[in-house]
Length: 556
Image (cartoon, rainbow, N blue to C red; front, side, top):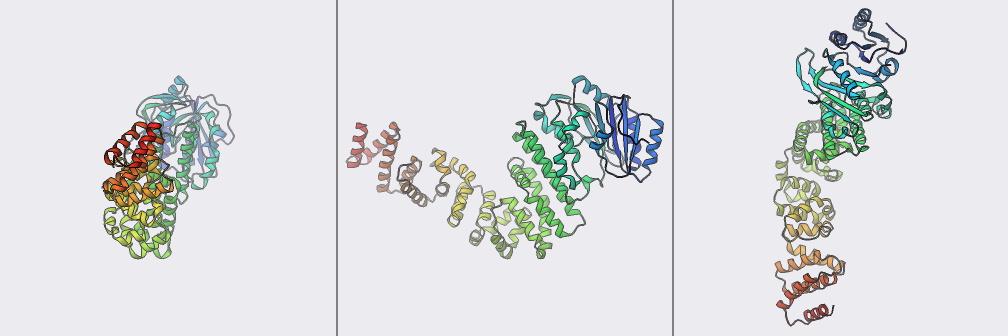
């Protein structure tokens, strides 16, 4: 057994295995390395204080094969960064977990590809196996690639699964100087995702990368690994890794919609695993509530939910179906301790927006409409909406009512009527539904030809028109025109003309038509002004103001 630091190696590759009580799985791992068709390597094995007989097994291997350099560590605190720093002098290295194994030609195939295309990182496909060596499928890129640093952005979504771990890859050793140690420090307490931070750091520092369309590495799945064990701090790594990946892509102008949606889907799966582990854990219900509340109130989770809702609705539905019932159960069991209250409030706000339910409204909801609250929580939105149609609900929880209605209603007129109804009680609501008013405008003949800025600034008028509440819409138009001294955009003025016609208000129609004629002339829209004047002459040929307008146009 060796204890010293690294000496200059004559080999081309260093393979590293850090062993910590692997039991019987150490045999296929080491045998697969020593049986490689490519022999020009050295094998660094670090026994991280194993206590299951691994120490003696590794000593036997080291005694039989001089390529094995065995190091005993009395504490389980040597990771890949320390291992490379202490023991690697070759140009390339590879990490192999103590319970995984390689195909016989893995190093030969990867090393040849690295040398041929001058690759900094190269890897093949991965075969998944369980603890009984039964195959569980394959993962990874199913084609040969060789690309430079700029092209990484192009392939990012198909590479990312394999850019979350460093095992089974040949990596240029010098890249380790680029590991983001600051991000590693952030996730130190989680004990999770270190390999993702390492491989992402060096992948974005690499000049060239490549893949081989062949299974070369076998990854063993256990039920008791870090990935399947509850750890309250685990969520920390979920959002830190998401932010890191987005920052790296942004630095290369590579945070495209495709890549961002993909990253949020990865994050969705990560937090789903974390939440599921929390739910199934033996920790107190109070802690479960706290952990899930922390996850669903995080800004990254809010962004994720919005992204899934817009672009991957099936993932959004799966997420809400999966955890809505769990949250409802926790709410029912923990209400007395207030943890359940906070959790379900956070969940409803995630589903419908942070402003959809205020604290005082939530108190009313809990006291008077608990059934509605639970129906919304478990995804039975349609049933909840039928209960919410009562007038009292719109009065007590207007924004939540509107948010649910916008999900359920398909009829444009009905949606507009609901917006108007809520808007009368909460005028500030109009500014929060601008995305809905844009849709309404496109489906209404009175509005579709108008200039967009006019309606973006007057969503209450849009809602009233689409709700066919024409008198209310007309009053709003006249109010705005008075405020603007009739001098601003003709969009509202033209709408007021149309509304007066619909309401058969002849005197007001003529007055507004004259104002419109003046406005068009003033704005230099001569042909439109002439057409408006012609209409006026036909309606009231002897009107003195109409004749005056005609005279001013002629003089102009």
